[in-house]
Length: 460
Image (cartoon, rainbow, N blue to C red; front, top):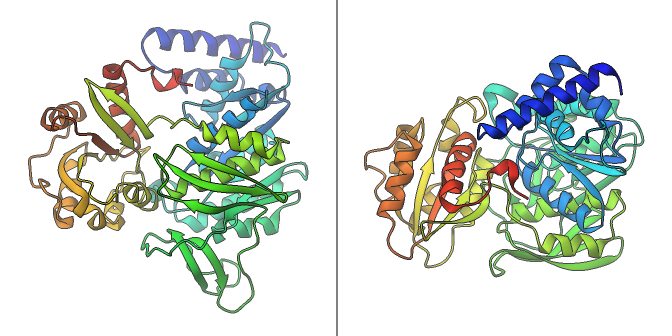
């Protein structure tokens, strides 16, 4: 190892130790400092990995990466994983530094599993040369940062063109913006999708309206959420490809989750995923497709998925002061619509804490809350407390949706909003928290301390 890299690793480890002593995660700062010393540290350390997988997309990166890491661990692999969700280059550097031993080496025959921010993908692929690149979906998110979805897709196209033939792609066949990326692949492509006659939904958060190459309109025979479904071009020039990794016999009402048959290479295994929502079926399929590329047996993958634990803030359940609390992250229209659909339980009357922030990591434009179908949730809501930096905007949106209690005074301070929600929660009732990203990090930290669970950077 070069002297510069050794110094960078040491500086990163010292920074991590200092931040942990101060009660902070140290998921980005160690890597940021190390990169200042050795800008190529991710490439240098990543070269020691036996194999690696990068996971990107608008929604589901953290959950998919956690699923894949669990599958690989169940297969007996050593895994280096940015489990706390720090998905910029500094986060990858921090993860690699944490896994590095005193002699500057990573564990032998380790596999890297890294979720990667959409805009970071070009730099991450250039530095790691992954064995497999997983792209789950492309949806509208943080327009002030990423630009329109077409700009993100164009960047992904350029990245895929630069990948070596040894890098496989795992792509969502049901998202036309993602499936059509296969045309630029130089190596192996594994497609995943849902092959089930589930009823279509109407979702005005859909993004893919026409073929970006020909301009022909997309026609949907079945829509599962947003623009994810069974699609074809109106002029007959293109249609959804047949996925090699499939979900069939989907039961969205399985006890405490969703069940489906996972099929690949003529084999099938039943999965009982302890997470709700069809979008988590797609996350599981993405993880299974990557595992297939990495040589994991289907039965091993299915069994590991059965034991999936919710990632922090993403359908995570905690017990706080004797009260059950359920966290459901919602950071863009399509993702939040799917989270809200998990609450459409007959006879349910939910008590909600809705938190809206507008920091850089959330997107400073919060107009997207008007594209979310809150009205469909109104019959299932008994009470709501609203908080966060843009609490007034959210309260107005919920008033228009007809939420009971949405006209109550808001609490911009998240601690105050949490206190009110817990204090007004009826005995034996569950509090459901619907936060945007930075609000989730803050409320999860506060709830975690009260629940006695480890911080997100220490979680399994």
